[in-house]
Length: 247
Image 1 (cartoon, rainbow, N blue to C red):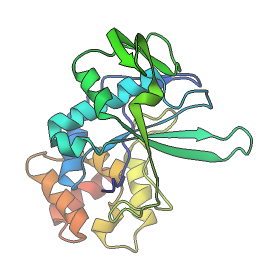
Image 2: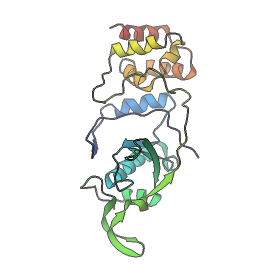
Image 3: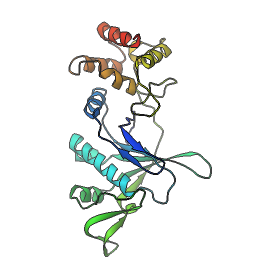
């Protein structure tokens, strides 16, 4: 089947042109809850990388396995097998942006679950080390080319039914140089003032920001449902959001 990506969440992270490191995310539970209320669930991981010799590094493999394992625990084994790892790079010759997508093999996930894959010690290496000898092309080894662990999948364009591309977008969380604040809320609302109120809120990052002001048990589910359905924003919720924008 097809895997559709309607929104991308960026967790806290550090990195430079050669490597990245994903930090613990204190907002993770709220993000998962809000996404679920909007009819969304995790389908994989996406990251950028400079041009390199390997397709996925050992660090990429571990990140993809960790994410898929979390999805497996939340949504079940069969759903998790559809998880995708997407890589965004730049073609050094043409300068164009290149999108590529892969899926982790069942064998790789089995090795990850059993602790056979060693945590990577170096960035951007195209092979993984194992804690025990494994058989690769009829030879025992503790070094496995990462190409054995991945399957290439095609990418198609997709128009998200709720969170489609918009001319004005709320700042992305955890991104250096961007601030999420009431002024940005006002800017988004003003930019789409000709749309019905629920449609003005159809920005995943905006809703994550607003979720911190709403009761997670009563207010947030009602607002998320109104955004998805395109109608039914309660006057109290509209008043609260407008007051946030006016601060």
